[in-house]
Length: 421
RNA sequence: GUGGGUGUAGCUCAGUUGGUUAGAGUGCCGGGUUGUGGCCCCGGAGGCCGAGGGUUCAAAUCCCUUCACUCACCCCA
View (cartoon, rainbow, N blue to C red):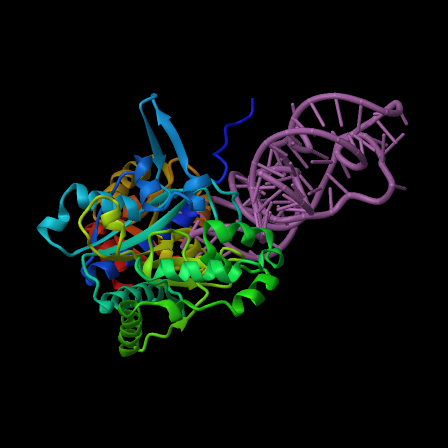
């Protein structure tokens, strides 16, 4: 019988790794809370229409990557491929905009896209998703990017490289799109196959084609900045000047485009060279038309999504700060000592001391080995001899120093020792 | 969806031109005299050599199929 394995592209996160996950999550809560964002938890399953309307029908995500199924022959449901649409759905469904026009929300959880797995890309992956709804002030764009970089630094990335661009808005982008299509017409045969297709689906994507021939052609193409409306232009300038007030380094990348249709004006990314082809660890931008598109009032928004696995992959291997090593190992010898050790062990745990003991009646040597393997800070040696004299041995596993401590009041003594370090 | 690479012990990998009971390191369990971890030494457990078929006296090794993993294209976080 073949054992059952996990589904392709779906990963177990083992105890060895979860320390890092908890660390990153706690930093996210800490930083986002300081900036006035509050957590929202939303379902993993949504009606399919939410994504076809939100993300854009002709995007790759919607066209071929969604886990969609017909629920009991009644309606189509989809495992969410991203979080923004769901957050906005919840925001509208509970009329959060009526209670307060400004909502600052974040959520952390799994997303699902049926792509071919590779380094940094899984079918179930996790995102830290942040959304700021109800403000179109360019300072909020800068503030969100500042918070993002601050968060990345606080988990240990040294110099996150922030790239930014403007994508224009619903009033100026169509004109630009038209200009690009005109420019590319007649040059089809010099473009790669993918780009020939893109001319009709999403001509802006030709800008970030890695094919050299396409890059050469596109170099002479019209630039968005020539077509952008005054409003978008001013917005872009003001975002930059706000970033400069924080001395936040950023690079303008006019070739950056976004894969989701809803983005307008500011778009940004944080990339890394350590992840191979999947180099984006954060993607985000403004989406001033999306809320209206999803049936709500005309409310602006901006947000970003951090690829959790990609971020984790950049963190140092296994610093002690991610681990939860036991503070004490009780090495009990013989049945009498065991009888004493068992309640002591659990009482200490209830006082918050990470305590382990042996249940197999092993030799002292073997118990000490286990204490060492678990990286325990102290070992408490408790045998019949100690029980009769009332003096136990407390061994510091780091230094090897060992000293007698009184059986009376042992819980308090141990707690004092552990807190003193 | 399209290419390339790889599947041998829990993990990382050897395994010659096909040739007896398939190896190492690491991890695990035990031991190196009475009750003390790390280093060292000794012993033990643990493999349908990814799965199925074929060639052959003989297959981990050659051929076919399939599955899985992985990297890249694509796409994106």
